[in-house]
Structures are given as C-alpha cells and as structure tokens.
Length: 223
Image: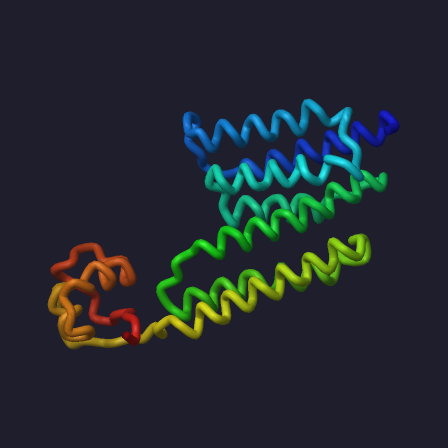
C-alpha cells in the first residue's frame, strides 16, 4: 500500500468515525466502551489491513458497535452525507467510501426494524424519509459499486420497504376530531375509545400541557 493511499484511507476513515459517533452516548456504558475499542482497533491496525481480507469486516464491526451503543438514524445520515462529499483517488478508498454508504443504510434498516410504530402516519413519514435515500444511492453511487455490493444494497432496500409496508397495514390510521369544549384526558379517552386507560396515549399524541384541559382539536388513532 502506497503512503498516499494509506494516508487518504486514514483521513476518510477518521471522517467516517466522526460522523458515526455523532450521537449522545453514556461515557460509562459497556456498549460505548466496546464502540470506542472497536473503532480504536480499526484505526490503529489500519496499516496491516487489506481490502480483500479484513478492511470490510473491521469497518462493519465499527458500524455494528455504534448501533449497539445507541446510534441514531440521524448519525447514520451524517455518515452517508459525508461520504457523498468524498472524492477518493484510490481503489481502496473508493471501496471504503462505498462500504460506509451501504453500511450506514444497513444500520438504519436495523434501527427501523426495532421501532414500535403507533400509526400508519408514522410509517408513511418513515417511508418518505427512506425512499429518497435509496433513490439517491442508486442514482449517484451504484456505478462505482461492485456487483455483489449493488445486489446486496438492492435486496436490503426491498426488504426495508416490504417491512414498512407490512407494518403499515397492521396499524390504525390517525384521525382528527374536534370537540366543543376542553375535556380532561380521561373523559376524552372514554368518549373516543370507551377506554379511560388510553388517556396517556392522547396526552402524548397531542403534546398536552395539562391533562385536565385537552385541546379541542384532537389527534387520535382510529382504533
């Protein structure tokens, strides 16, 4: 590996790690310690790594460790955005940039798979967020992907949309209701759902200041 190639790979990797760790994490958690250790190993051992052997494995371990430490969709967005801005000069760094783009998307899929959506509207918002990301990667990056990486990306993209579509079909719709007076949350839950125990749900959905005086225009679920 040439010095210039190694230097570029390290610089790009540092920028990946900066974005990858751009989320709030407890300094003393076991997962955070594991993430820092994994990233440190990747960076410190870089001189010995080779593209066709362990670079991809080591890099993916960093992404997995970040997700396990609580990384967010926004942090993974940051990685992808940063990598789109890169102009790598060597095959190794091109591969690292492309891998980071695919891995950040794959980790977003993992994060989304664990979200407990409450309504079809929430799923629609997520679909509207992820579809442009998929289209952007296909439009601007797939020419530089190797065939296997492109196939894997397409497969994961399809699985994500299938998961969100299936989730959406199982959830209630959001409905809007107007009332002539400001009811307490318990009374509204009883009127809407015939179930006072769902008052907390109404409070959360409507960002209520005081549960004794709910707003008149209510957001609720259809069931």
